[in-house]
Every structure is written in C-alpha cells, then in structure tokens.
Image (cartoon, rainbow, N blue to C red; front, side, top):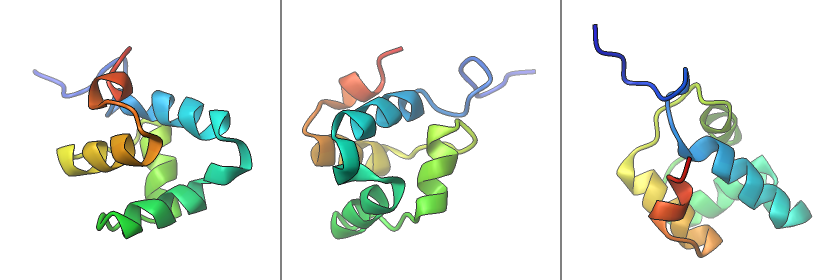
Length: 81
C-alpha cells in the first residue's frame, strides 16, 4: 500500500520552517507566523503551524508559496531534505 509520507512525516517543509522561525528569533513565534500567513490570505492558526512543524499535517502548494514569500526563500529551499 502506498503511503504519502516522508520518513513518517506528512510534509518535508516543517523542519525547515522551524529553522527559519528560530533564525528570525522572537520575530516569528508560531502565532506570529500564523498571523503573517493570514495577511497573505492563507487561513492558518497557531495549531496548524504546530501540526505542520511536527509533521502531522500536509502542506498545500498555496501554503508553501506563502511560507516562501514570508521568509523570502524559494519553495525549493523549504523542500530541501
């Protein structure tokens, strides 16, 4: 049976999001990132960010593009393993 997972995670970018948030210090708590996503027109809350970072939630292409814009990185960067 095919499983849609990468190393038991539902996404690749979650780990990279954690690194990007921490690199920006207090500027990007999970709540502030959720707020920034909403300003980009993507309806996510803090709990969704937590589930993405922990690998429990899939990420849509629209969400991936918004994360890349917020952190000023490429989507390829977010998808690096």
